[in-house]
Length: 334
Ligand SMILES: *Cc1c(COP(=O)(O)O)cnc(C)c1O
Image (cartoon, rainbow, N blue to C red; front, side, top):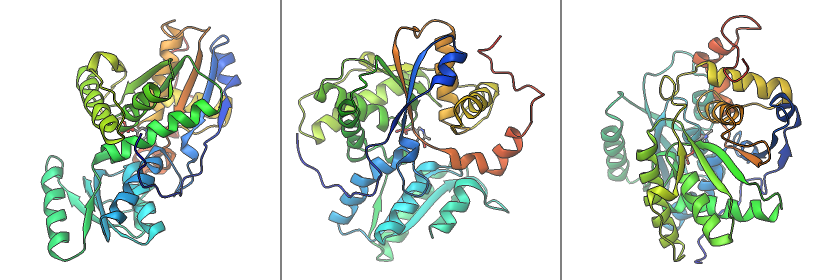
C-alpha cells in the first residue's frame, strides 16, 4: 500500500459505544455505534477524515483556496470551511439554493468559519462551480477543487484506514450500517475491508439514489481508490451492498422514519442523529431489524457519520419540535 500525505486534525480513533437502550427497545438486538460524529473538527462528521487527506493534497499542490459544493445544509461544506480555517487556507463554497435571511445550522457555521459563499440556482450547481473555480483561478487564488462529499480516491482512502482503525478496536461486527450518498465512505470501507481482512457485511443505506446507481458509483470509486493506494483490488456493483427502501420524500425531506429514529436515539441513548443522513440510515436499520432482515444474533455496528448541526437549521428544527403528540410514532413500533 502506498503512503499518502495526511494532516492530523481529526480526533482518532473515534469511540465505539454500546446502544443498550435501543437494543432493549428492539427486543434484544446487539447494537453498537462508532462515533464519527465526534471527529472533532468544527462539530465533526465523516468528511473530517477525508479532509485530512484532501487538504494535505491541496497543500502539496500549492493551493491557497479550497473550493467545494453542496446543499445549503451540507455537512461536507461546513467541515471543509472548518478545515480551511484550521490550516490557513481560504474557502469558497458553492451552495445550491437561496441565501437564508437568518443563516442557521451548517450555513451559520460556514459563515463563522469565514467561508465565502457562491449561490447557485438549483440545477445549475455544476455550472456555477465551474465558473467559480475558473474565476478563482484567474484571480490567482490557486484554487483546489474538492468534489461533492469529498468523494475522490484521495478522500475515500480515509475510510479504508478507518476500517483498519475499527479492526484494532476488536469489536468485529457482523454488519456495519451507515448512510451512503456520494459513495466515498462506502468505497473506502470496502477497500479497507478487502485489504485489512474484514469479512463482515458493509451495508449502505442509500440517502438519495436508487441502489443500482449507488452500487455502480461505489464500485467505480472503490476500484479507483484501491488503484490510488497501490492495492491490487477491483470491485463490481454486485459486491456493493446498498438498501434503497428508505428514500422517502427525497434528499433532505424529513419524514416519520427520520423523526422516529432521531427521537428514539435521543430518548434511549442521549445520542443525536441528523435529519438528512443518519436519521434516515438509523431509521432504515431499525426497520431492517424489526423485519428480521438483520438478525438479532448479529453484532450490528451503526457507523455514525455526523450531521447534527442540521438539527438547528430552521427548516428542520421547526419540524422536529412537535412534542409528544402528532405523527411522530416511529414506523417500526406498531
Ligand atoms: C456526507 C455524509 C454522509 C454520506 O457520506 P458519503 O461519503 O457522501 O457517502 C453520511 N452522513 C453524513 C452526516 C454526511 O454528512
